[in-house]
Length: 308
Ligand SMILES: Cc1cc2nc3c(=O)[nH]c(=O)nc-3n(C[C@H](O)[C@H](O)[C@H](O)COP(=O)(O)O)c2cc1C
Image 1 (spheres, rainbow, N blue to C red):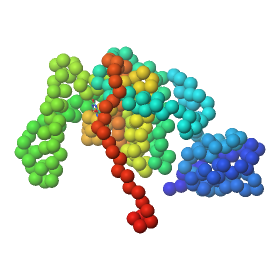
Image 2 (tube, rainbow, N blue to C red; image 1 turned 120 degrees about the horizontal axis):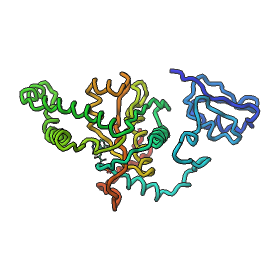
Image 3 (tube, rainbow, N blue to C red; image 1 turned 30 degrees about the vertical axis):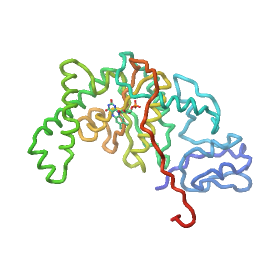
Image 4 (tube, rainbow, N blue to C red; image 1 turned 45 degrees about the vertical axis):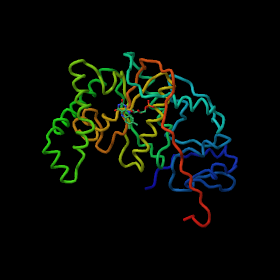
């Protein structure tokens, strides 16, 4: 499928250095008579040509620099070159982001949520599709309304899972999922539903005053990867912005199976939600960063005799 070309070259500014031609992944540009020109019929619209042009001769219509998108902070001008950022600070930020399971009631300003969405779009995406979508639940009432829908899905699922003959029959038919769900989740979900109804305790969203749902169109080449990479940008940025965050896998599961719930958030039929991110201010300060299981990478060295 050919994609429209958004690259515009200002001939008067182009010095013909060829940097844009060298960097173009799709042969969209060539040099002709000492100037860069668009000669291809397809473009990733990745903007690498624009980024390397020393004379600002290139623009991309329908695109704007990321720095112009933010409302709550100013992004420095220019490109942060490899090696120019302190890796110790980055690793510290990454290790200090934790899943928040106890939020304060303080709201998250709309401008912060919108900035998080723009930050999310700095993620890479397969063939630069950027076919992600972001749905905001901007206040506690909206999060609670959505959580109620998720809980009623699980209430219904629990009712089915308690029917032992049904579990047995499905297992015989080669569908052991309901049995597995019953063994692994039924009791925990039951406890969550009881806490919600009797103690008004929110074990699902942990009392979050806001949430962002990250979805992606199914016609993108890598919808799951794109949405999850964008989601991770949100998790890290939220921490840097003073917020706690938590992925709510149960809500993703409910949205995948419950048509009514999808309708309640006006989710288009060709979109899948890959992440539901609870957001808010963490109740407790932490004293230490994350701990992880040790991991040893496998190393495969190729030489002429074992190469493919
Ligand atoms: C796909 C996914 C789904 C998750 N779903 C939930 C969830 O429904 N509720 C919850 O409290 N935490 C959820 N988490 C958070 C994990 O439990 C958490 O990331 C893990 O325990 C590591 O802790 P940390 O994020 O604080 O480093 C989820 C995480 C992932 C990656």
